[in-house]
Structure formats: C-alpha cells, structure tokens
Length: 255
Ligand SMILES: NC(=O)c1ccc[n+]([C@@H]2O[C@H](COP(=O)([O-])OP(=O)(O)OC[C@H]3O[C@@H](n4cnc5c(N)ncnc54)[C@H](O)[C@@H]3O)[C@@H](O)[C@H]2O)c1
Picture (tube, rainbow, N blue to C red):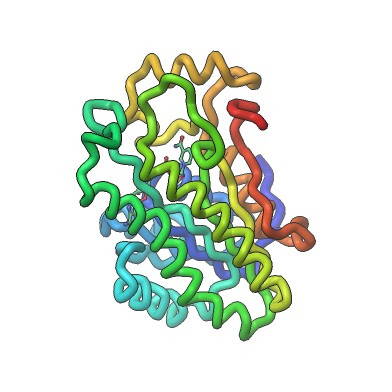
C-alpha cells in the first residue's frame, strides 16, 4: 500500500499503541510521515511499538492523571507539542469468553472500565489541548464502538460498563468538538465493528463467525481498516469534519 505523506510535520500520540488497532494506527500514521508517540500500559509493548514506528514508546496507565502528565511531558520533551491525539486504549473484560451480566458484575470491574475507557480520554485531552490551542491546530480521534448505539442481539459480548463508556465517548466527542472548534481543533470518533485483535479473540469463536456472516462486506475488520479512518480524520482531508462518529464496521450494525 502506498501512503501519502499527509501527516508530515505532525506529532501524533496514540494510546493503547502496543498491539491491535492502536498499533495499526501508530504504524499507518508513521507511514504517512507523522512522528509518533506510542503509549501503552505494558512497558514491553510500548517499547516495541515505539522502536517500530521510530518514536518514543512510553509506559503509561491512561486512567491515572499523574501517569498521563508524566507521559505527555516526556513526549513533548522528545518531539514538541502534540498535534494529533488518538484516544484508543480501552478494555472489555470477559469471563470465560463472555461478559459479566449486571448482577454478577463487581463494582471494581465497573469502575476500572470507566476509568480506562472514559477517564483515559479525558486525562489526555485535558493535558494536550493547551498545546494544541498554542499552535492553533489539532485533531483528536476517540475510539468508540458500534456497541455505543445498539444491542448486539444475543451475543454475550460486551458488558453494560463497556457500552456505557463507548456511548459516553460520543457525547465527549460532540461537546469537545463544539468547545474546541473556534481554536482550530477537530474532535471526531470512530465506531469500529468487529476487528480482528487480541481483544476480540477473548470471545468465543462461534460468536465471531456469526458476526462475520451478519457483516455485509463478509469479513471481520483488520486494524488497518480502522487506522485508515484515524488517518483521514486526523489529516488535512478532514479539515472541515468535526463532531462526527464514523462506523468502520463493514456494514455490521448499520443504522
Ligand atoms: N477489536 C474490536 O472488535 C473493537 C471494536 C470496537 C471498538 N474497539 C476499541 O478499539 C480500541 C482498541 O481495541 P483492540 O481490539 O486493539 O484492543 P487490544 O486489547 O488488542 O489492545 C488494547 C491495548 O491497550 C492497552 N491498554 C489497556 N489498558 C490500558 C491502560 N489503562 N493504559 C494504557 N494502555 C492500556 C493494552 O495493553 C493493549 O496493548 C479499544 O478502545 C476498543 O474498545 C475494538
């Protein structure tokens, strides 16, 4: 695949960049000329992703404001102000391949999913928006999910905590887009369908096969399918696009 240097001169920070969709996004942003900061909870995955994309790989827990502040300071020391923030880190706990139903969900699991999936986006945006306002440009891309808008039918996939956070990111995206538009900063979200990553393989194989059959384009997604949308939304071709949530789902769960 030929990549045009749409992101030359831009600094991009991707959370959850150690594997799966985040790694795909980090790779494609680098291929398009961005200088990329790879953030992950797992220090080995962060270091490996950083080495691969030629930028700093920083271990950080997105749910912890102090850890986020330290990671952003290190990123800015290495590369200067961040132009593109991709809030991709997210978790979807399973138990034996299925969600915890609400009456079996302990409060600590609920709290952890909100802390990673929602607070994580808040912590990074809060820390990096002042730099974007300073340069008068910026793009934030949040990783939502088709789970934000619809029930999956009888799949025991995602718990209410996960769906709550992904719907929360839609409100976060729209309101932040309104707030930051006057500063030349866009804020959009992606709602992936079923994408082949380690997270997805936590579910039973027959579930993924059923989803594949229900997907008009006839396959599960690849991280690169989502990465292409992250590059579009954070690049110059989307300069008049803000406050949007775009499905990348092969038609699965379409409106
Ligand atoms: N795979 C899918 O089908 C799918 C569908 C819709 C949305 N999504 C969303 O896309 C994003 C990426 O999913 P994925 O499938 O690549 O997941 P994944 O589990 O394969 O990768 C997630 C990465 O995030 C990191 N991470 C987890 N908690 C973190 C924390 N507290 N701080 C920093 N990093 C942390 C993990 O170490 C891992 O490297 C998530 O937000 C997920 O909800 C995935």
